[in-house]
Length: 119
Image (tube, rainbow, N blue to C red; front, side, top):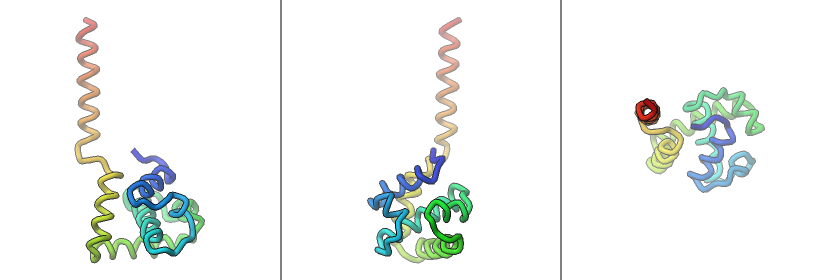
């Protein structure tokens, strides 16, 4: 599970092929900008970081974060390639539904089997 902005940045980097330092940087190359937009979007919309926290992490103004999130939301809805990239990142950062339940269930079964064998 992702717990820090650095971890999220690494995942976005690995998924998009854009280096984490470039996502944090100031480049205006379209591929880098899109990876940066995805980072901002996932940080705020999926992991509940505030726009101010994301802005501080990236060394940007909060208003830029808000604008970029609106822009990527629009692109996800209207651009097929952007939506495909979004879905690819989402699959990586979001565990499948029921996974945490399944992991917990397996842990409970293991604990039960250990207890049973010790009796």
